[in-house]
Length: 277
Image 1 (spheres, rainbow, N blue to C red):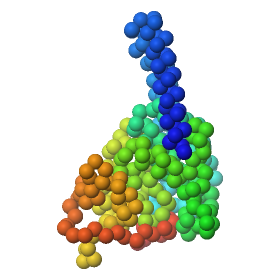
Image 2 (image 1 turned 180 degrees about the vertical axis):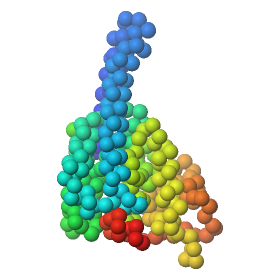
Image 3 (image 1 turned 135 degrees about the horizontal axis):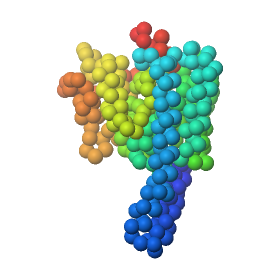
């Protein structure tokens, strides 16, 4: 499992840091702080800064092709330079190992990588009606190897369920990841960035949870996206609840009553089709 390999990677970094501290301590206490700042921390900051610059390039692609709550796959699939730019972004990102970075840098890295890898997968098979058409009857697009990070080959499922969810315990992530489907929370027309990640995640939650396509309140009662059914435990961690999470981001609190779930639409989230609804 990737989590085990990543834990080992972090352990190696800790051991290396301990060795450096011991060596520098022999030269005097002041050298420990100075030495560490110029070795492991500096390297991590440099790589995190490189990733942030790459996210800016990804953001430009998203701004060009994400319209409303959908993606202009027809235009993107016909733009050779931008297909290359997306592939270059994924390749450049996967050449970096985010394990020693600050938490928000790591989180932004994995969210953007998931979304970019999903887009690349869909565009490689476009035209199609649903991402679920990729892989055939007995295989899933989320179980396909899509990227290699720190010598570990990963699927979309592993990025979400072995890294993002268990490592960060942030249910807002569910409204940042996009599975290229109409039922999925909409893709931002910008990349996620460490500097304002929490604000971006809050915005994504507010945008989704105040839209009747994901939270419907009316004569049929209260119906919410299936995400709250599939990942209920994520919203109930630390004494929370689905209703509490929803009310935190909705313009108006939910009325009293049973919360049921909307059916999930796996049709491809093509901009023109989606925005006409």
